[in-house]
Amino acid sequence: MARTAVWAQRGKTNHHAGLVAEAIVAREYARRGMEIGQQRWRGSAGEIDLVARDGEAIVFIEVKKSRSFERAADRVSRRQIARIYDTASEYLASEPRGMDTEARFDVALVNEAGEIEILENAFMMM
Image (tube, rainbow, N blue to C red; front, top):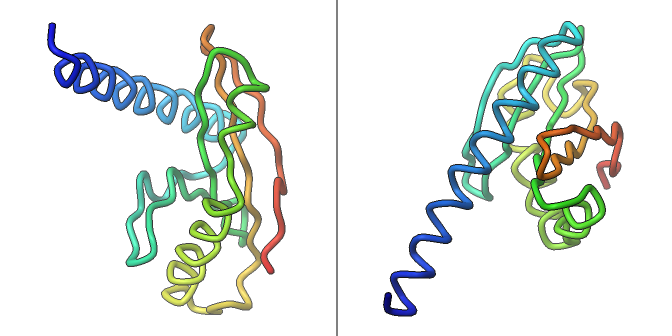
């Protein structure tokens, strides 16, 4: 198989694995009593994997899947955090209280066994 075809197949596999990881995480948040309002919400700055409501608060959730929790956590970069902030600001602008809306940023790590580790308030809005 040509190198490009191998990379294309890996990309498809990773994409589908990411969708499965997001579904697993969405079910966990729902089990905890939170409503998943959006999946893969797209703004002009980028995409947020999941947006949930925890009472009056908005929870922005970045899902990272890898072989281990450590490897998944390593995939969250400063650049990505900045993009998530920008996208979340755009999302909050549509809320009735705007930027005064209570919000938090969680990172949900999924390992190869499908286990989840949720890091609540993984980073704060600047």
